[in-house]
Length: 356
Ligand code: SAM
Image 1 (tube, rainbow, N blue to C red):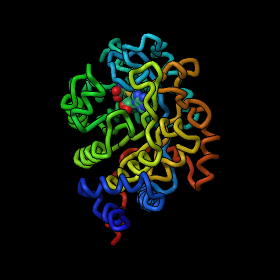
Image 2 (cartoon, helix red, strand yellow; image 1 turned 30 degrees about the vertical axis):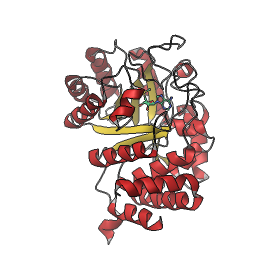
Image 3 (cartoon, rainbow, N blue to C red; image 1 turned 90 degrees about the vertical axis):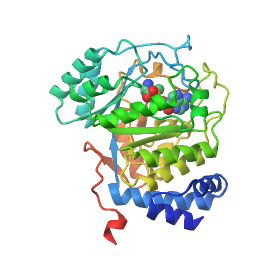
Image 4 (cartoon, rainbow, N blue to C red; image 1 turned 60 degrees about the vertical axis):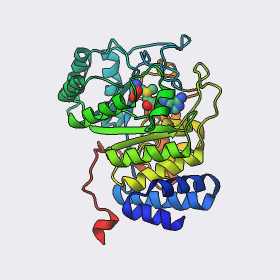
């Protein structure tokens, strides 16, 4: 397995059989997992040093027309408390975030039918005019290509849209009312064409997912070369059809994060809120597997609990924008610190290959 890790680190890729063997080994052999994570951390440090980028997450709306089996915001969840932020509330969050030092704002939300292009455009123009130096990331699901282009022109820079599953049978099983994998991938292509820095990714451990499915995900990620990759464990929400399923496996999640880091040395990879929710040290474990971004919650405090995509979602303390001092302290325990710059994708940094 040591040879496979070394090959992955130098070639930035492995064949499907080797990826599968490596992932399986990582779920049972601590030494292999550690070897993989150490290699990923070395690669991340070569690219980003000991700085961790921060993104202020503003959860725009908990209304969603989708019915994803795993998500607490799914439209069939009649018990979900729904809210929608006004433009003024978003601007107040930005004001507070900017004061705290955030230079990236992420507008994320369910697919809320009232979020017309006009409304979003106006909001983006307002944000752009007041904060010309920040990066604006959108994560608002599937929209038309024309819409993506309009929002880009209005000032958005990045877009997060997890592909969720590269295997179309698994994709359809998880999204029976969705528009299918091809449509999802078409959206990712449209986002690239529109000039966004694009993020994709998936959950680990969702019902029906096998190691082979994760290998398919990794191969798709390698093919698409996204600028950002979000990977976190599946976590159950009681009011969904997957509510009594077990949470995703920590080791498998960390191994997958580490493999993505070695495949895409320059990628921006968050240590996800789901990881921090799964286990108290999850945020640090993610960084110690090659992640280099955290996304503290900047939503108004009275709505945070309502954006419940899964149970007990971490949105306070070190996961909250106002908890940056605590986050800094936590990062210090592993020798890292917050990097307050915008943290755009940059693939011109040196790699080990360049230096040889
Ligand atoms: N509507 C947008 C979209 O579809 O990209 C953004 C919001 S969506 C809730 C953000 C991400 O949350 C999804 O891509 C999904 O992977 C993740 N998510 C949803 N339910 C989850 C769960 N039960 N456990 C872990 N992650 C979950």
